[in-house]
Amino acid sequence: MQELLGRISALDPQASLGLRVIACFDELIIGNVNTRGLLSAAASLSGCNAGYRHDLPPRSLRVSPRGEVVASDDGPPTPGSCSAITAEGLTVWIERDGEPHSNDAIVLERLALAVRVRLGGGRREIDGRRDLGLLLDPAVPIESRRLAAARLNLVPTARYRVIAAPLFAVWDEHPSGAEDVVATPYGSIHALVVPHDHAPVPARPIGTGPATDVDHLHRSFRTAVVALRLCDPEVAPSVLADDYGGLVGLLADLPLDSDLPDVDSLDAIMSHTWGSTTVDALVRTSSVRQAARTAGVHHSTLQTRLDTIIAELGYDPLDNGIGRTRFGLASLVWRLRNSRVLDLPAPTRTSSPTPLR
Image (cartoon, rainbow, N blue to C red):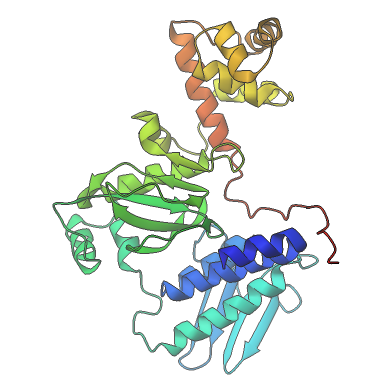
């Protein structure tokens, strides 16, 4: 499928995006993901609530783009406010205000197929939480997490890493291991458990958490999600949490709505065309000349930019005292707040193919 995506992307970018949706649901069907996970995927891909209703046995569920169950008190979607498919006693829908988006039809079609396959499986735990979701939730009692790990054939004395990826990630190779779609505050995430010494996984974008024992795999998952959000599809499509040491744990524990003036101050700097590359160069080096070489500009140009940054921040980011710490931490939090790695990528325009002769 990935090879086919690459070939078709060169011919029709929109068709490539549609095939990514198909590949995503194929992965979920193969992974035997439950109905809530399927709805989470559809909601995340479309950016609006998704739901289903089954006549026999009577059952319904609505899920938000963040993977949260929408309360029944909110009421069912009104006619005309959603796109729906009904067949054989099963109705699936996505709830979008306004005109449908270009991929709504393919998302709805694949959701209907996946839910039908799921319901046809005759499994009793259709909407129950799955073992990996239990294992990665620190709120679940440790004995329940250990039982879930045993059912996943994870060895208590071994160490593992959790890989976090968006549902539309491109996998050149897909390792075997416990995997599922897990709801997070940032939407539905594809979680995969691999041995601690597994070779780097050729996929993008992905974040890889630190190696831990079974009891602490939830920490590996939380930091893997942070690593994923630090990815840049163009520059750093894969991020290893180990590279950030203890900082990644602090970032994972940071509330989303934290009041951080140092981070807010970076907004004006990042609005410059040179902002991102200059800030990254300053974070990774210790002098103006080194930063200039990293950013690929003359040192006098870098000095001018640094003067602008100091005037905006009110402190020197190259100060060997607390300034470097403030600047480095603020830049990481700014990247997390402005991360777009979990947004479904827009199709890219490519040159017309060479006509056949």
